[in-house]
Amino acid sequence: MSDVSRTFLTDSRAFLTQDYMPKIERCMSRLTEEQVWFRSDEASNSIGHLLLHLVGSTRYWAIEVIGGSSIGRVRQREFEPPAAVPPDRLMADLRAVVEEVDALLAQMPAAILLDERTTRKDRFTVLWCVYHIVEHFSMHTGQVISMTKALVGDLDLVATR
Image (cartoon, rainbow, N blue to C red; front, side, top):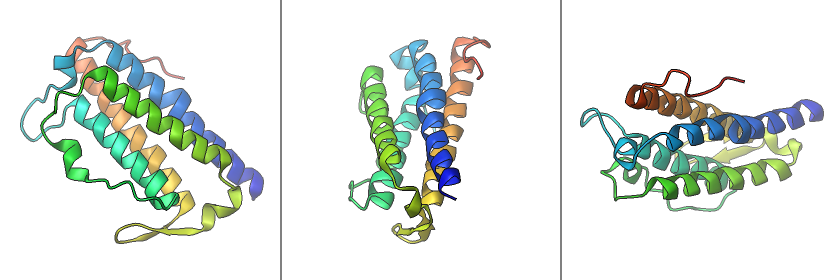
């Protein structure tokens, strides 16, 4: 079981650092600040909001739920109108949280994957929390790619593995 657990953690780190982050970075390199904060309507999020949300959610699940250190997250703030956060700051914050999670997963003992953690209202295994971080990051990476393609019209924007 330890080999499977270690492979799960290694693969989770690779998805975040070698797959999703480079795709988001390529998208962001093609966008203006106006495009980063563009919303097609009031009910939609901008790419900037999605990045703020990825930072908040990823830190919450990794640092607060898995790690047990409160981060004081207020989820709704991630979706409020932009506070003129420059794209380079959004990316610096996203890189920092991915590096933080990568370090956490690199040193995580495989034996704790079946340990349970408590959120504000539920209990999950550490394995579930890591899986959620990866799948949630994947979902929003896909949205960033799709939105970027719509904004810049480049169908070859993101190379596949």
